[in-house]
Amino acid sequence: MVDDRDDALPDHFWAAARRLRHLSRETLAPWDVSPSHGRALGVLMRHGSLRLGDLSEQLRIAARSTTEVVDALEARGLVRREPDPEDRRATLVVLTDQGRAAGRAIRAARSAEAEKFFGGLSQTDRTNLLRILRKLNG
Image (cartoon, rainbow, N blue to C red; front, side):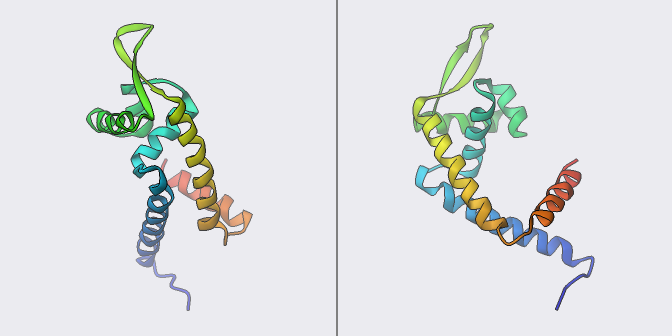
């Protein structure tokens, strides 16, 4: 039976989000990295070295939270802080070689995770879902 009541939509959305979060935690477990740490590594893989404030903007989290994420990644040897050559007052967050290797492995694992999660959808459904999510996230 199809549940197409308007009030069922949020329930199904949150159930899918919970499943995806759980799958993400499982995927990241081998690197002892939380989802927020994995997101930070992904941003640094895409954009290269970033100032803390720019990393905060990319992650859409508060500067204090970014500092905690960077501290945790630094403790694991995945990033390091360096002075910004363009502004001595600023600090850059830089991936280490270990961080780049972890980032590549996590990217591959997350790609497999996404295929597992979304694999039952047709290409048309995936395209429509992406369009809808982009619209919702405005």
